[in-house]
Image (cartoon, rainbow, N blue to C red; front, side, top):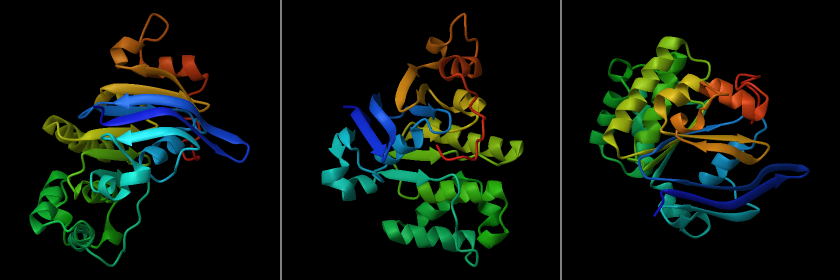
Length: 246
């Protein structure tokens, strides 16, 4: 059984056909990069996998379960970290994590574990309003990890971060990957991020999958790297207006 199975899914918004018959499978423990230019439909696809939107047509199964019938069960096994997460600025890092842990009925020991995993030990008594961009993203990741998620969705987690902060976050995710207990679905505007972190690449444009597979299997004489492959397939660069909705 696949960890995630998307079967011939469609989604439209008025006159916009955002997702047009996408099917894909993701195995347990895989780190998957979902790439596409702005407007490609990748965000809509991820939101349907997260259970935030319902497909107009088709089915999505998470560990063999559907969002329509078993939402409460599925919410317990996924973690979400969005591109921009806002926290109450008058709470400390530790207080914020304890607050979210209470939603999951999570023990204090897990709060300590995610603080250590995300390198926030020296910031746990700091107000969230004083954190840098990289530290806020690490806190968002820590919140997403509180419930021991089997499946983690990260939406452009390093957009706007400086190179050092981006590398810090990559190292956290690589450590998580080495544990082998989490499946990751990553959307990103950084090709090197996808290359560094992910086993499987899925390139989407105009609501359809253009190509997917291991990076080494996708490259050929016409594309020696992921940037070239992406441009050849879409006619666009991934960095075009990265702040726009997708």
